[in-house]
Image 1 (cartoon, rainbow, N blue to C red):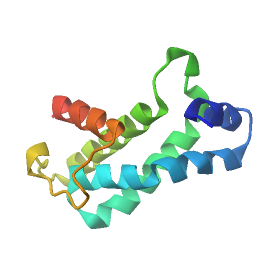
Image 2 (cartoon, rainbow, N blue to C red):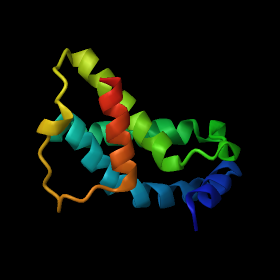
Image 3 (cartoon, one colour):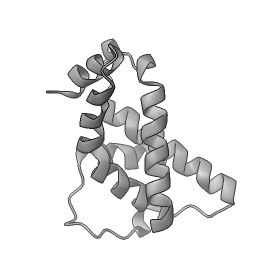
Image 4 (cartoon, rainbow, N blue to C red):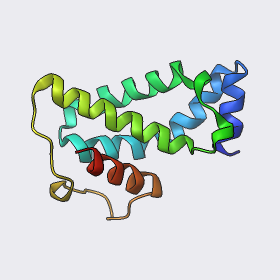
Length: 121
């Protein structure tokens, strides 16, 4: 089942279907947030907040525009991280200086979101 099918189900009132998206993107999203913040304590909090924000606004997601759900999710995460940095007056971590504890392979979603974040910085 692709993301758009799941989103259609959620928009039709199937609350449980959202868990499919959470399971699919949870690990990638947390890795992305860690790469941006470098703060293990923030990762879970921001991740939960991002999924909650996306869930609350998923009815506004327009499948017809053709924007991948993953792009919307990761841009939401990027914006939430930037807001957290501003709120705490923390310095941004340059993208090239992040530590990667995985095998070095990024998902296409992570690569696109990192490029978008770098452009915003």
